[in-house]
Length: 194
Image (cartoon, rainbow, N blue to C red; front, side, top):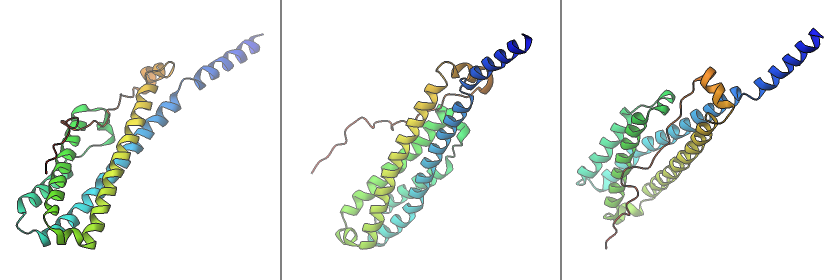
């Protein structure tokens, strides 16, 4: 009788523990970290392409130093903002990274406007290839951000659902992760004038 009771108790404990979500929560957190790594990788790709773009434009538009310098400065600033996987729960760190990335995007937009003034540059095959790579990289960054936010949503929901919320509260102590948010003013439509 004692052995039967012990066997039933072991069975119940194993069923309860198998449904506690311990492994699932850790797996979901790893998905968030991987998605963040994908964002960092695509941001690095953009950062690597920018010097080539700037040098190509410099050859055609030497007197546009202010715009070119703004791109170089923004790229340097982006390089100084470092965000580790542990900072994904820190809203201030995420905001700082997003602000630096926003400044870089703004500077790149101005640079591409400068290009409009130089038809020879726009026709240059090397520049066109570089511009296409940069556009593709921007698209990859957007996709990586969306995937990261999806992973964060899944993770944040998982640590709040029963019974995994108890596992997190008593065993894991995982923190909610921050979403990658739009830049300030992103909701405002840009003005286009001819």
